[in-house]
Amino acid sequence: MTPDALEARLRQVGETRYHHLHPFHELLHAGTLNRGQVQAWALNRYYYQRGIPIKDATILSRMEDPALRRVWRQRIIDHDGSDDRRGGIEKWLALATGVGLDAAYVTSCRGILPATRFAVDAYVQLVRERPLLEAIASSLTELFSPGIISTRVRGMLAGYDFVTAETLAYFDARLDQAPRDAEFALDHVKRHARTSEQQAAVIDALETKCAILWTQLDALYFAYVAPRLPPPGAFRPDDLAPPDPAPVAPPR
Ligand SMILES: O=C(O)c1cc(C(=O)O)c2c(n1)C(=O)C(=O)c1cc(C(=O)O)[nH]c1-2
Image 1 (cartoon, rainbow, N blue to C red):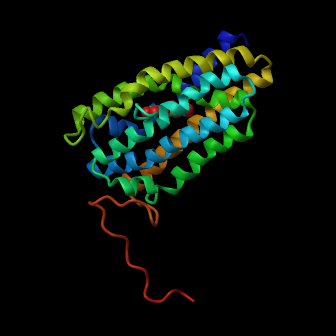
Image 2: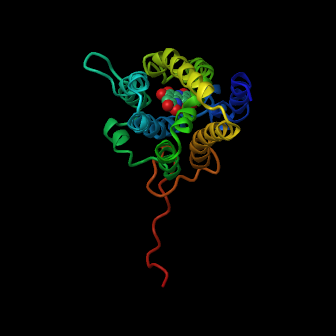
Image 3: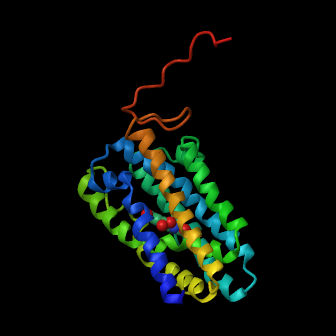
């Protein structure tokens, strides 16, 4: 494939597999979830936010070219913040507390779904174990995030009276950061994925990343929309009854 044909193929992956198509996002953006369900989303996604700079530090540690590292390290600064700027993790925590969660509970990650943990950890593992080119390609879902972020902010402000523009401030910076990061990664992938094997591998990395995002929403849907069965130990919104008490005598 030519580099442009590869780009077209990668964009096709986004059109068919990106999480803008997931039913949980459709409900979230339409304003039809209740507060507990929005809290569950914010709580679980905190673990993704927390994992992103760990993922990027892993990628950074594998880059041998200082010029490449100089660009990539900005991603870590964006999420971790600096002396005079709040980072993405802090802004996400503000989002989570803004929808009514306790900060210490959120940062403890005690209430997240097991599938959230497995999926985010799989992302870190992917960038550690696969070739650097594929690790870089796995970030290309960000090509598609500005669209969903705009839809989400508009929908959530219109749909939920407990959500304010201040609560969603996390997304403001992403609208500039995501295109900047995605264009850099796309250019790198187009220049370095030259053989058909490399091209197939970067497409696979992007498909795997889409699956990592999709899995997190599947888990939220199962636990909090239908059949509404949060696993043991996971966050239970106020409107969900406590789990059945344990049997008196365990079966022999
Ligand atoms: O709101 C979203 O739907 C969304 C999606 C994605 C993505 O596509 O992975 C990211 C983000 N947000 C995001 O805020 C973010 O910082 C981010 C970093 C990355 C990455 O893979 O390095 N993806 C995403």
